[in-house]
Length: 463
Image (tube, rainbow, N blue to C red; front, side, top):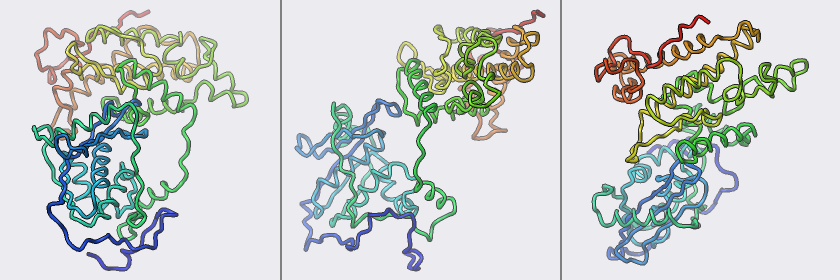
């Protein structure tokens, strides 16, 4: 233990939480082992990551024990981990501080958090620690206890009566019609705030400064885009994702890096088109699509514009998709932004990961190509109808983009070259199988074969 004076100083402490009372635990003259309590805890979450997610926590003491409890967690943040923390908190709060408490859980997240990670979390003042608003009440109430508290990991779904009972209680809690009230207050005497200066890094200090500043509100245009993406995702997968899940979806490595940036800008409505030009004197005319005569928003460019290019590209995307799946709906603007959330299932309700990955690639590559062709038409070709892209040029540009992505996928399976970053061969096979040219003549594993192309040939029409 370090006894240097610097270890007693902290920064980024919470104003108004200072307490002059010492953090004394109430003591008992003696301890009675027979008073020891053993409780099983578990958490549950349905529709995790979606707007309609709900989580619950369960505590189980014994068969038909009146202390068995099911709690539905209130608020907007839900996950299985939150349910597990709240279950442990409930067990600590509702048992006497003088009685030994033995918590048994299948959650390594809770046990490792309390035994391995806690010191580091408190040293950094909980900055950047997920679920800290649930961890801190649990830690404070554990420290408030006088008797010993033990944590024991048990294997989940192993026919352990206690674990199964806690799991059933957690599911019951998550399915409650009305959320319960969960007290997340932190006892002032045991509320340790702020980051320890002795362990403070420049990076952590920067995060702490950012955390103390008022958070900026999201722009209206961004909120509108997120809502469009959210409801489009529900039409495709049946799930209503949260904002954070939408943002994470555009980071998927199934989508090319430059197109991830493109989708990020779409969600933020950050492109210089449409309304962006309306408040710039002498440039207002640039806000109008010269081909259609209406506002040239990104939604118009990708889904409505009649200028050469867009219709051909979506027709090609549909043609390729029908080689893999039967149903294709030309993506809406919201579906394009939410393409990273696509999910498909077979008749047995099993996920079709290959189809989902192909959809992400096809939609994102197609939308990005439409944007590039539009920029070429408006900027380098100066909206000259004589220089519009021909049908053959658009067709072949799309074929080239998809073949380039197919070739990249195949190259990324080389583990000698890419190590742990390499794609699994089966992932690539599942994605592209059924869409290739002359596929019947290819071996089952065509990854290392030459001349593997998507199953749509080039357009050789000179007109």
